[in-house]
Length: 374
Image 1 (cartoon, rainbow, N blue to C red):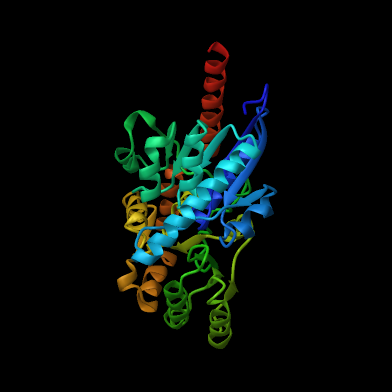
Image 2 (cartoon, rainbow, N blue to C red):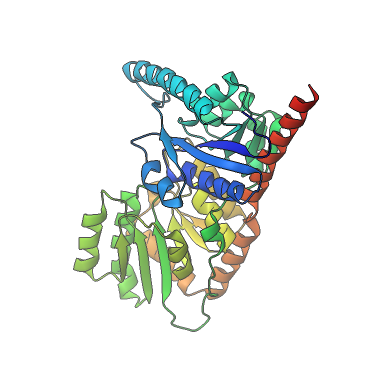
């Protein structure tokens, strides 16, 4: 229930880093407010959130839930049953923790929590990371008090009167990163951060390892900081050793701030959170959109390319040779690299998390005033 001075807030965020990290950024901004007493996260026991959220010091509660899109009939029936269980668990949890407002960052873990919030008349705020919104947020938008969008292109998919363009929230450790400008000397070492998403991407891993044959023949001075994903780590590590690829493959990079501080450019999928981070930091990039994300990543990448911040290579034409050619051209054109970084920075919205936190507090204050006047 609404306390006299302070509020309790729940953030439903789970599945991928693209949903989890914006939730953490929003939580950090809310924590800085003197009007917030408690912030909890709600996710799934088997999700990536169990590894990430406790690292940032926020309590995590687990519920049962499952996705329904693209599943066969049996999986949909099972998912529907789990959703009902998740709704019951969410109702109990929101009441038990005396939650005053719920923030959903997309993904199917948001659905039962949002429904529970609506049943309990708790205000709901949604955050949409992508240029084209996901099905979960589109469906839940009719229940929300406010939808905070990262891209203007997503606004037409939601009720107009509820939308605010905020950008994608960035964690405070990323915001504090200081990066040196790309060296203009003729033969500097270019440090390239490779990200295939929180789970890694085998096709990107293979392209990097194959690209080295071509880069080596051009005597390119390059060094890779390479997040491979857990499943592909051992194989990629052995390829680095066998082929003498300069760099450090890692299964998962926990300290992204440190990795960004060392990077001159990024090779990545086109997840919204990664793009928000590299634009805020002014990093040029080569993007390989994930082709099965219902078009989200393609639209994200296209926005970057149109602004001159990125070069996009569709996955169907990605190869070691193609990637090497793009890298060689960029390494030989330092001016273009700098221009791409400058273009990226113009797209960044470093105040997004605080903007969303302010919206949450405003909604709570409005509800308090309405309750007082009733």
